[in-house]
Length: 511
Image (tube, rainbow, N blue to C red; front, side):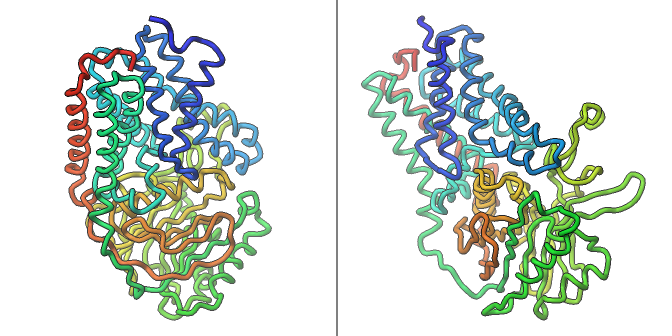
């Protein structure tokens, strides 16, 4: 068979274009038809070539996709310690190359799909792609941009995440993304059925919105809150001479007049650069709080000892300065908060990007914090909001999610928008409202359906006054997650079975 992907610059550009088209489906563009870019990788996998000839095209596709969606990693290095700033683009390239090994393996192992009809082959390929997403989460601790994140542009499509779960929705989307290849490259008599399957699959993803959203009300009588967004640039944030100025900025924004005194004031991650256990620090923090209000904020907690302990923590303080609760971040950022393989890499002169010589330590687990007048709260610090199915402690007690973060690391790149999309998914997935306080944005109030009730845009300094929305009815993804995944598998299997009827068995192998 003639090689459809010869080692030629034009072919490489075409393969890279497929990866770029796939990236366009995610935040901030949300060009949903871009998911069809995944069909380029599927065609590579089923090409009648030796596995070595498919490995390189698959790698080019994956590298283009991951680099175009994760280029903001270079931004983070440019805002870290000066000794790391030249490593930004090498790090982004290395990360993209490492993640591209997954698509390369899918392409190389495509001969296993070669002899299958289109429908079953597409179903297995979609499952393999979701398998890569699971590997990124559970093995690499980097659950960024699953295919389901392409649905986070509006609450209506997000209900598919509420019903099928993140990976269930990703599975259906992956299968639907491959159908255009079957329509274009398959036999003429199969095209109407595949086009119909595409329409039915889109309807299956839209149906949860019809079931969950119509008739929902938006009560405005929840506890009042204020979210503070100080918009402090990362290269200024940890300037020792300005730490008191930044704390004063948070306090000044907190005491701005409000139509209704807030019961909860929320500051971002690492908002307090001083020891919260010091009573004098707490006295300063709460001096501008309204009576009976609660202050929630992020701060680093350092415990001197052998070895010393450092945690990235979230605190709730009462108006009298008492610590009502604390949560220590569980899911730490590799290289950002700790150095993997530190014994080896530290000898090479590497270290974590955050300030200080001590690595952060993970907390014991998710917790539910309680404060007078507020719903039981599950805190998520920074990119913990990216982990599907892990937004609460599993007790069923939380009625509110709070996400504090500092996305100043990523400037005005696509990183903050992608992070915000993932946070919206956690609200829809759990049916719980989510309050998001981000240093430079995007701060927002999101209800349990994933609807954005109020927000402060990226780079805006100010406050967001709103009310805490009530929880939505618990969705299947939160109550019966296993059955949600089974339902998504059933949708894909049914579509693959229907595709066998027109003439899938006689289909040319090129598709």
